[in-house]
Length: 499
Image (cartoon, rainbow, N blue to C red):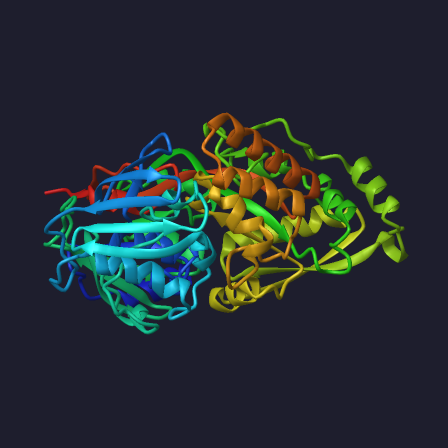
């Protein structure tokens, strides 16, 4: 570590721009086109560059964004009235044509998007005037507002094609400056912002995949901030540094373990349940996470109106795990090994450490877990095309609305149409999601979502591990730092630099 520190000191001998906030991220965003990028870095940075038609409030309701108002004259029609005078970063005025193009480019395949399935209910979009957008639906869609919100999508200029990611142009409080893959992304304050005008001039998102290097960069002041990327055991040390501050808040980000249900071993639900029972989550939270997490039983946050805790649970139970594997026909072989599985991870240190501990815990159940670590872009490509047996990632922000169930588990959401990467399919779940999507009775919708959560807990196409606290480590020269439960980067819109 001393040698690494000396090397880093040599690499950063020249003074950096004091007006630029250096924000450490573990990997490059996969695609900064908000119609395409679904990885965490893409969505977080896109949320600074782009706006949706609506936004979320603290209670997961909807508030105006690019649309200052909207109405639904009938179940198949949704009318949005856009704000006047909103301009894109390049000076162009935002009009209804831009909104129509953004959604239609995904629906028609002009841009191949994993988000396209979210707009399957849209029959046509009309722009009768520059500030009016009319969505005509094939059937009622209660998810549509969520899928038109900031963070879920961003409105792009009319005509933006497949190479838009090279220089994205939005209406958000920051505008794109440059990107060097695996090095950095630079954004700056948008002087044309219609909403908040950031106090800071520029942010450089520096890609630093190694957690030790991240810590050292923060300690010696060559970086300003990192969020949810540092090993928990470094936090007490960093908190003692006079130039640093640690800010934490209970979060809604959820860590999950995903299974490929087409795999010959994992297609048996008893094997998936046995794996869940072999994982000591409480121990992992106490040790790896230093208590900065809460066990999860659903994708939805516990405060959500559709959340239920009345689901099948998989507490740590080695005896139950062994019984389930025995029922599935997998008896212990030489060395107690029942079978081998492969878990793919990114090169992120935290993810690799989690995988290593899971390897130890599953070994006690007779499951030999082989680990394969890849650079993030390769790992994520494999995940999105279903080339895996197991992997672990986080849902960031998207799990704050029930539409996550459709995106992640509906049969119609197999990639590239959605995020059902494990190719799980359940006809009853599909029917419940359709009913909730098209109905207007809140009590009936909640009943649908409760049963959806119960089905997913029983079938276990993915195992929800825990809700992570949002933890921001920042240089004290940054003030007004207020982390969000979702772990988004939107706190950059209001932070300031000490004078």
